Length: 74
Image 1 (cartoon, rainbow, N blue to C red):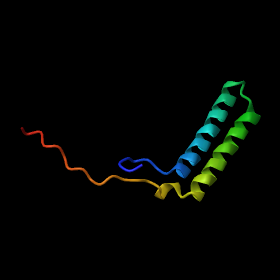
Image 2 (image 1 turned 135 degrees about the horizontal axis):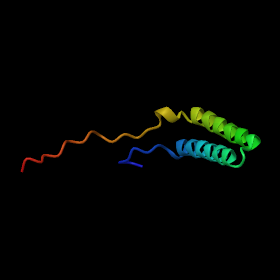
Image 3 (image 1 turned 120 degrees about the vertical axis):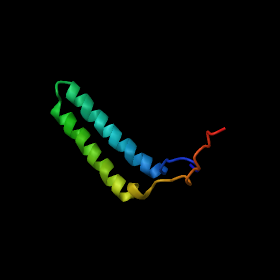
Image 4 (image 1 turned 90 degrees about the vertical axis):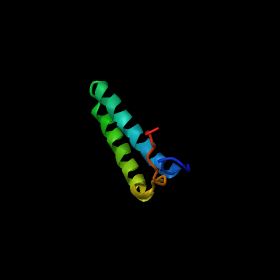
């Protein structure tokens, strides 16, 4: 992913797991609430957090070189 601010696929996997957990928990709250399904979603978020720590998600950012500001004087 050169030229972007994206992370690696392993970091995106952790993010996707966490998003799935939030989605399951949110749907569970709308369905009654269904507390068992809510806690399943919370568990999925926790697993995603562990995966994020294991892949060292916070140091996995690709940063572009600084860009020169555009000259709008002409």
